[in-house]
Length: 498
Ligand SMILES: Cc1cc2nc3c(=O)[nH]c(=O)nc-3n(C[C@H](O)[C@H](O)[C@H](O)COP(=O)(O)OP(=O)(O)OC[C@H]3O[C@@H](n4cnc5c(N)ncnc54)[C@H](O)[C@@H]3O)c2cc1C
View 1 (tube, rainbow, N blue to C red):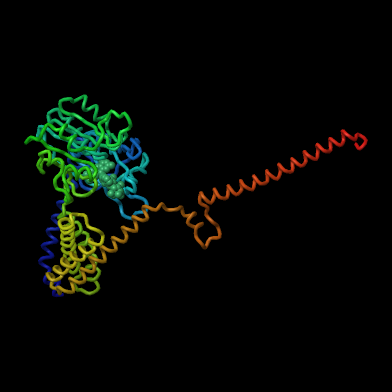
View 2: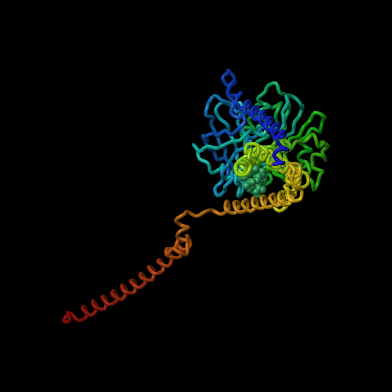
């Protein structure tokens, strides 16, 4: 009861602030609809929330890449995305409980009405890319809010070098398309596109077309690490020698954008292990190069997720759970169940927010977002203990029990998540058998399900027995023919016998 009384004024203040914030978010969500009545074209991705799009068509580009065209429900609507944006696709690969969210960069004109195109490379065992490759025209896909990338400003640089590797061409292509579309933008661009083989030269037709149409503004050079014999392309990776010949030399007004496989990005811009990259050898300072990491680690072309916002979201979820829990326990054991519920909600909100904030910062700064599942369990235990212990103490409880209990909650929660994730990964990588086949495989069922090899064995046995029967028949026919010929001979030599 003492705990409840001490928290009433704070509870009311926080509830008021939360209410105003909620009203703000509600208004932000509603206003675009009001403005949509104006003559401005409707935009699909400008608001908050999810957007579901129907897959209109698919085009296979090569052995691992497809182009997917999605249509908007309103054929006059536009994407509403700004240059260097990616969309978060929410996929649901088979065998996984939780959706897998991955960013993809539209390659179509961002202002094109009615449609949007993605180009997706399928990675071996890739969860989201595998799912996207399995989609058929007519299927739909949910997208979350867009990831805004580098804020491109008109004529900010006189020369931009674009270094792309493999599927890393998509963000670079979006940039090229957007810059060249604007006649006022006079930025000169040179693209160096490195791939493994000729068939990986994605979007080549479009790039060659731009190079011909805008010879003063855009140049492209390809390099293939494993070209065919007599290939007309330069052989090799994007290395120091190639860049020395392609670059005009760094000037104050020059920028380099890099997007490709991790090894290529590390070699060009440097990594933790070897901070000196090729670009710095060529005289480019760190802030002259921008890297868009496509492998889901640190990204600088795309902003890193905002730790505060994600912590507030975790706080909101745990706060809601606290409200429900507080409501139920308040009805059972408190004369003021509403106040009990609000106080509990606030307690859980603060606990959840500070836990997630601590956990995210430790993982980010100490482990550089490269932690193992075990390390994440320890970090969750530590953050849970510190956040839970402190909040319990602030709310009038005892520090040590709070610390111990919340450390355990953090550790057990993270370990369970790790176990479920590992189990899901295993399931996702093992193709599941149909129900009837699983039944037939069961030791309790007297039927046996046959594999292809079993079938082959049975068929070859049958073939052998047929061949043996044919051999026996051949023998019999031979005997009969012999018998017939001796009969004939005896009939000819002794006609009286007939
Ligand atoms: C801002 C941004 C924009 C992107 N735009 C596109 C796009 O337009 N088209 C596109 O195809 N992809 C794009 N990606 C990459 C995409 O988001 C996924 O990372 C990719 O499709 C793999 O996801 P997955 O779930 O299939 O693979 P996972 O299941 O996560 O991984 C499967 C295997 O593939 C490896 N792997 C995953 N991603 C990469 C990678 N990028 N390079 C090398 N190995 C990798 C993993 O190490 C793992 O071994 C973008 C990424 C970012 C950050």
